[in-house]
Image 1 (cartoon, rainbow, N blue to C red):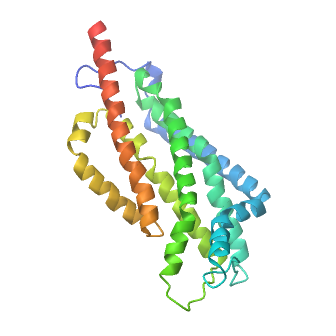
Image 2 (image 1 turned 90 degrees about the vertical axis):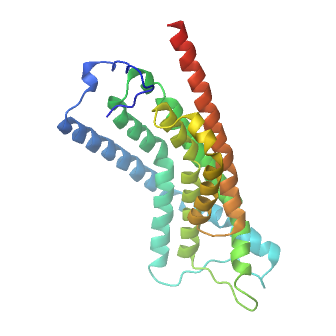
Image 3 (image 1 turned 180 degrees about the vertical axis):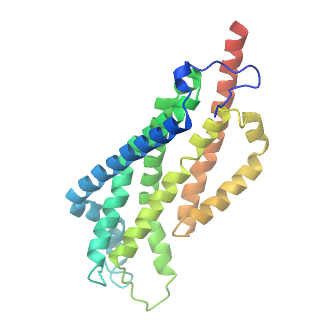
Length: 266
């Protein structure tokens, strides 16, 4: 599968060695999957070793909220309601953390699997692709963590008066994990748009023409994928995604100018 950069003549591939048979593709896929899984396992082991500090870090927004609003609003303690809850919580935190720690390796393996289908000019985007994906996912996780106390305050206040808040630890950890995942994946949106423009599937003119529909879709998507469903988290996700949309359009325009200059020089 090839991704042309323009509608004219396609640039030649780097070498004939880039063409692989189906068996070679399957073997390559297996290698990339195994390496990604090993990276996740190492990340899980590392998270298990530092489980208690990580749990305190995850609890900090909830503890700060309860200390600020008082015991009548919520209690700062999380509870385990079953004999297996402690084990499943430790496993969940370690798995979430292991995947996050292994994310650079996973993205690199994905890119290396795609590389044989790309032309030589396209392969130079490997490092920016991996770096920007990791940086944007981390930024999304930071914003999710930053808005977590507001989301919890909104959710608790909707429980009504005289309702005592007792949060099972596994439910709380699941909420935090889903929040980080939703924001991290949502922040990968500009990387996808830039890649589609480089591949020739989309153009910046198309994206700019449909910007009103794009913003509407962004806000609807943010409302759907935000686990807490509160307006603070939704705006914190939809706002940056809107800005990233126009940044992706600008990158597409700059790439078009660069290619036209190169063609004129040739």
